[in-house]
Length: 120
Image 1 (cartoon, rainbow, N blue to C red):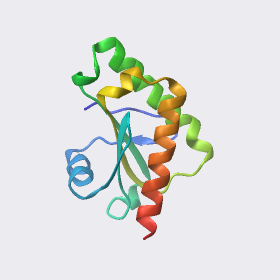
Image 2: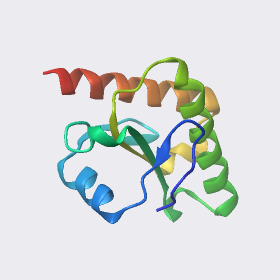
Image 3: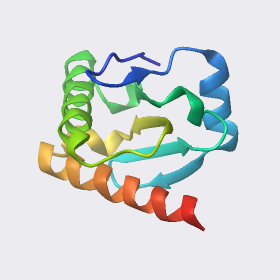
Image 4: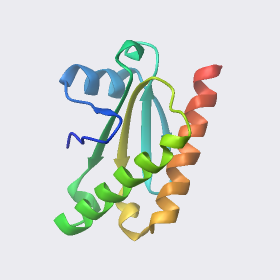
């Protein structure tokens, strides 16, 4: 797992946050991404992001490309407000075949579903 420093956001750094989001967070699976979010327990710490790209996705060049694309999408989405909490974005093996617009569409869709799940 890579801790990512994203302008305007904090990254997930502690094992406690990773374990909390993997154990108790809501999950949405799309073709290229798995997005997990935990809103209640860590809301006092603001918005935190983590990006996880495993070796199953491809070689180092592909993993870094996908990581940069996801980072860029998160920064672009600053105009829409994120709910306070922690987010873990995991790339699936299909992400290597997706272009930027497809990744952006999948991430926006996943975040929208997570928001609706949290309001219920």
